[in-house]
Image (tube, rainbow, N blue to C red; front, side):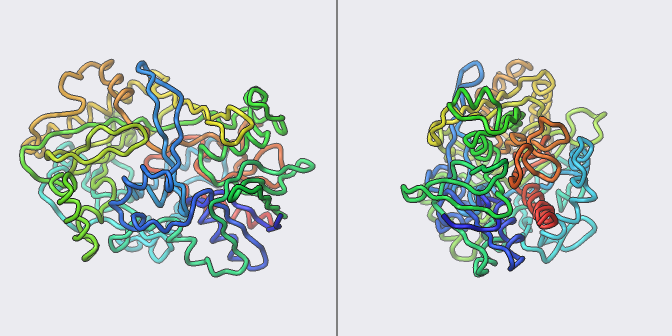
Length: 533
């Protein structure tokens, strides 16, 4: 048993930021615990290596959901299992969400999380390729870039958006209107910038920071109404680490509620059914989960352009790898999707409620738990989703055994508003690909195909052939009520010395991908923690 001041569980974007900021005070001892291994896989550095990383159990957790939808299919929700967490295996898209998203957090009774509080945080953490401005930061630890290249196919995707009345934006985070542009991504010089790269590696030499890997935390140790440490396993042996000040759970929207519930903190009925003694009854631990359900559209192209000709054959993949290793260029130096867009599904809306991402390649249908492979025939694919779903799923333990599978219920499209929004998003994507600018490239729609036309058929397609967003939030949501899991300072209700800092504390979806927002959330949380030391 070893004692520290702060014990941080999870070395994803939140954990790496917290380790960096809390250990800046050399008077405190900080421990960062990661269940996965070190981030030494060479594919982590290569942006185009992410499909293999997502499929590899050494670098990714694969959580099985409960069967859902009319077909009762099962999904595998993937999360990072290495230093940097999901930022070491994801598609590197950097979207912050808009000011109204953060003001909505404050309006829900969470002071300190409005846009006036969070914009300065983003500016402080960013090293934006486009330089400093009223809404961008420069010189911070997290490099953010966009592409300078132009390709006819991608340029026509942008022209298609302009044809629909959307702004072509150089910086997609600069405005909150309908817009389209090349993706902002956490890539620098053709290499991935993970949370470990940006925040952890620069401070690993601090003598007051300890990082342990391959260590699974099973429970929080509670004594006298206070969290005093964690217990887990490393190399087959039990380990315990004590925290003199705080335990901070930063393991994400799936693993954090799992640890809380195994520790006896959660819905009483769930805990008792699993054989866990109730320590603190907190009815919404693992509940109120929201996740993006993404439509998948694919199109066959009229010409052999795009990335399929390289990435769809073994010889082509070797050529792409040689191109990348020569000077960090080509499709393997790009983020998961080249173009991002935000649009309104109804003209009366004040801001976009839909997001889409386009890549100049197409995929074969994946096997369960596997990332789809690139086709050889030329194609293009697009994912799209409603930004603010209100259907709520859940994550619950099924046993006191920490290795027992979780019960993950996505509960997609449970509300009429989500079903209506899904249909509108899908029709919006079809409008984009039917524009004059793009139609010359499109031979036909492969997925789902022109036979899917009615609202019901569209929803069924989204359920059966769509994808999860890997964006789950809300399972330990903050708020002012007694049944909210954490308060606005991210302290777990009912216990002293325990905090949650990750996407699980967000009560509502932000407009876009969560990596940037979680990074900023952790930066702000470090200030809150230090202020209470």
